[in-house]
Length: 360
Image (cartoon, rainbow, N blue to C red; front, top):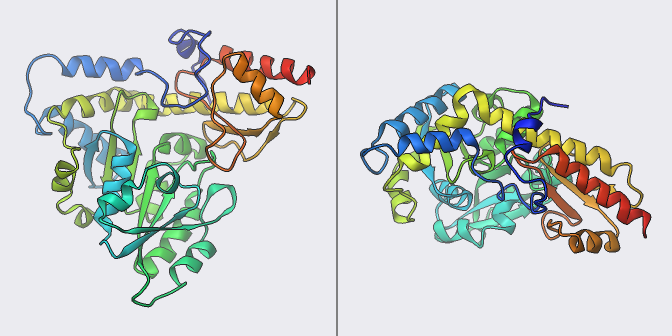
């Protein structure tokens, strides 16, 4: 199990809070990001990204990925994905995605809207992951002028069911995509969780594997708000700043989006928080394996646990105040762990699950 920081996390959140497992968006701002935000609030600074914090974070991300990439900051993941995909498409193009991808199921048509109509073409794949065979089937299905021309393939890392793409899996998809003239976009809302799970360098599951554009999630790592859109191929980011402005994603006080990144990048705090969330998910999964009637639906490889539970157990959990979702992914109950999930809360959830299972 990865190294955890249970003592630190437990002291930051009240253990009686049963909302913890509904979403990793429920978590507060981590102390490191909050300290950086407060520091950035001292005095005046140039607006619209022409400030020292934004420059420093952009340079840090270039160092992190070992690449002279273009970096932009937007308010949320839907905007990051939608604007990044729109920058890679014309309205008559299409984007190949997994049929459980967030861009397909949970972004309210944002990618289509901001691209003026680029169609999403979903494909299936085991454990929430696209594979070269599924991709090839979609992009070679038709080539006539009546069909939206495939132009981009998008991957979700970690996936919507908590699994992760290995570097070789990404590289195989990217090689096929590039061979057929498609660009590769990665929705990295939980990129940090995937990275620490795999134990690789950031470049190994991004540009070295063939990813052209990454939407690097900050909110789920403990930031108050904000995602980074990273263009590894600078030619693809032409006019992206104007696209952000038009979409209402250009922050006037940009330092408040960018500065918190310094707090989590220093000392690899972002990796520590992701490792803690992953470890809590592993502990929850371990406990679920011993509960009668519970079945894990997918490998637990990041910070999400999907389980099939008897209806009366689900009802009992809700009656006891636990909050979780059952409409995300491919069914079952989803339990998300965060940077601040206390081990005590995991154990209390497991105790309630055991008690409810005994009473069936």
